[in-house]
Length: 182
Image (tube, rainbow, N blue to C red; front, side):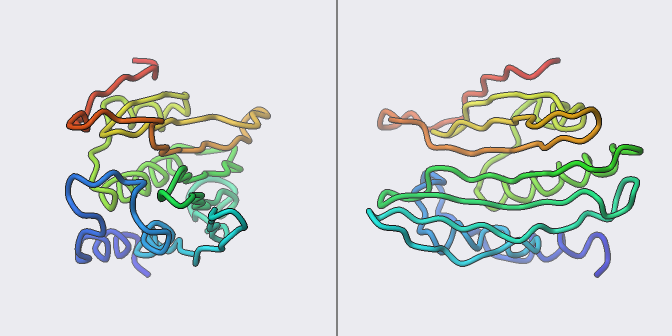
């Protein structure tokens, strides 16, 4: 597959979510298949009490050194109201030349946000390329970039989309609140 083919496939697909709908209100099947054009998809697994989840297998990224050492995984969990938490994880194992891996991860985040009908918030690109945590409030959701398990150059970045506890009616416009470093 050519490096740009996943992006072309993404652009040719129709929008998954209706305009104005909270991202996390979508059906489990929709949210679990959201990243299928990018090669990350898994069917939902139902749990007792109305909960559900899906987790994809890890997808190796060819960028960085050693090549293919870093990978992605997409996870979603939800309840009877829809998705509670969407996570795109990057496991960074490329200790030399990590910028290529971080740039590819950001492109996956852009694709995910586009499929969700959201624009990347201000400061997200810089936060990802610098591997710096950040938080944004956007369209009734909290978006966070978390850095986990930091062990020198080996770490994980988690991009998390969570629905806010309550969104007042008519207050679903973008209102970025970034804590990422400028």
